[in-house]
Image (cartoon, rainbow, N blue to C red; front, side, top):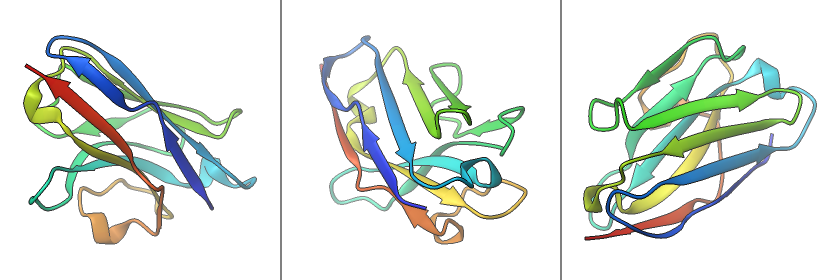
Length: 123
């Protein structure tokens, strides 16, 4: 599966952005989908993941209550709604696909990755 992330940009602290990740192929619904981020000089870290049906999701503590992951299997797209953004959220955001039943917070357990979209939050 090929993934294409979009929706990043520059926003002031307290603002919102919605990221999208469009997937190619007809098997999108068989993949757990996740969002990760990587800030300059830091390792890639887990942000959120959603099960294949979209019925369950998992979040990093740092984004709980502010970010929402969702998916539309009919459109082969996963979203990340980001509200109340903070300067610490500044990073390149990547979507990823995992061909297993359960989600994971470990980047190496995702088989497919999008190219990343930059989110910059100014103070």
